[in-house]
Each structure stands twice: as C-alpha cells, then as structure tokens.
Length: 266
Image (cartoon, rainbow, N blue to C red; front, side, top):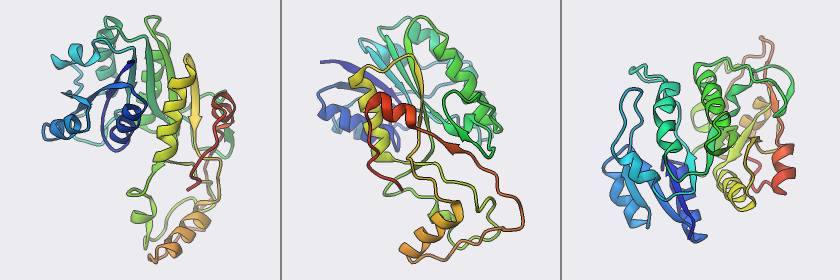
C-alpha cells in the first residue's frame, strides 16, 4: 500500500485525502487546528498537528513524512495576516526535512497568480511575472522544489478555486464598481482539482509544471451576472469606464498529458 503525506488537509486537502483513501492509498494528513485531529482520524487519516514556521519546526514533521513516497504540499502562502512571516522562509525551513525523508515525489499546489494579468493567453511556456506578494513567493517556492535533486517535483498551478460551498458570486453579488468586466474568468472546481491530482499520481507525471484551469473563459461580467440570476442574488455592477485587463490561462498541456476531460466548467 503506497503512502502519501498531505501537508494541509483543509478545503481541498481533506476531500482529496478521502478520495485517495478510497483508492487504497495510506494517508498521513496535517492540520494547524488541534480540534481537527480527531476529524481526520475518524476518516482513517493518520493526523499530525503541523504549522510551518520560518524559524521553527514541529517535531511531528519527521513522523509525518516517515515512510511516505509522495508528498502533497497544499498550504496557502497566508500573507494577508499580521505575522509578516515569509512563505519562502517556511519552505526553506521545511525542505531539508523532505530531503532526509523517504519522499521521492513532491506535488506542490501553486496558483496562476504567478502570471501577470496581461491581455494574453498564458501557457507553461509563458515567463511568470507575478504582481502580488503571494504570487512572487509561490514562484520562488516552486523553483526551490523544481531545482532540488533529492526528489522529483510537479507544480500544479490552479486558477480560482470554486466548489459547492465556495463561489466568488457569493461576495460579488450586489457589489458596485467591480473592475475588469471584460476580463476572462480562470476557474477550477474542487472536483476537478481532486481528479487531476489523482491522475498525476496514477500516471506518474513528475518533473513538470501544469496549469489547471477549466477551458471555459467567458467575461467576468457575463459569467457573474448569469450566476447571480441563477441563484436569485443581487446583480453585481461593473465599472465599464476603465480598460479591462486579464489573462486567459491555457490548460492544454495538462489535458494532453493526463488525457483529462474537465468535469465542471463553472
């Protein structure tokens, strides 16, 4: 039975862990919340309380990684808080433990925020040019992993994450002066995220970078207006006076490599 460690069993990591358990993998999962340890255990997941720090490390890291061949890193940069801790520093502190462990393959959940918001189609060949602090730190972290010869890494750049309980229209409804009405959407459903990660593991797709965005790119105005109407929410109002700026993220490489068909287009 192959063992996988999932660093970050939150909104995506928890259902991912449950799906991989159904596929007869043995799963170790981490959480930063003590109350969630029991929830993970009840699902059959070996649970660990781990919060990455820039200058400290949990003693549970070694046990969390022990005997796992695959590590999935699925934690947000978390740069919005007041701690000011660098995500890159946390990764630099964590990676030496991965090097010394049994882990041979790392899947790093990143974001399409590593690409600049310019009016163009971006592929994995596009030179990343992040504009946000989290995008900048994600890109540095990607390269720390890709350039490490102790294990093979695949970088998975997700677009905006949506799911049954998570959709941008819930906070855009009724708002005024929303920017970039003519920019394309770049979203991916939780179900597709989970199936894509499963496919990468099954097909042994390592040492690569993949964009993961549903191939469905209507304008923000069209898409969010339709979503508001569907759900009987107040219509979002867009700023039509400013020029719209936004990229279209291509997932063609992923579709071809994994022979993948997206299940949910938003």
